[in-house]
Amino acid sequence: NLASIISARKNGTLLEALRAELPAFEQTIVPEFKGAVRAVLKKINRPSVGVKMGEIANYSSTSSPMGQLKKMFG
Image 1 (cartoon, helix red, strand yellow):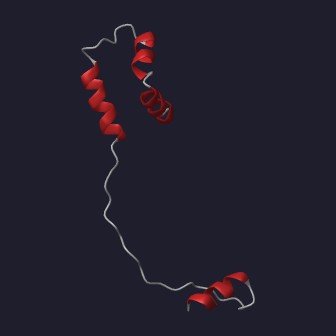
Image 2 (image 1 turned 135 degrees about the vertical axis):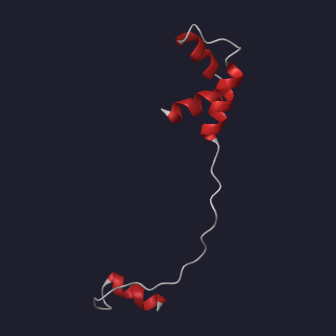
Image 3 (image 1 turned 60 degrees about the horizontal axis):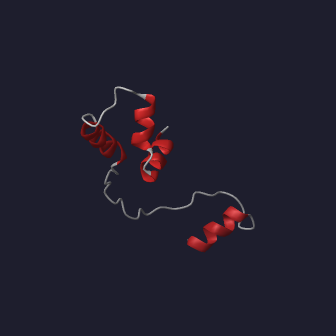
């Protein structure tokens, strides 16, 4: 899974494990694999949505926990 790949990469044991499991894995393949792993692990920049205005829809008494929350905010 992805978590084990990330931890092996941080520990520096990823290439050793790949060489042990895949005898055909050589240094010539490493740059292609390195680019693929980097592309998978790259974080996607998402735009900030910001604050949206709204109201807590609550049709219960103000003595309930949700009623107290609604009373606090509006």
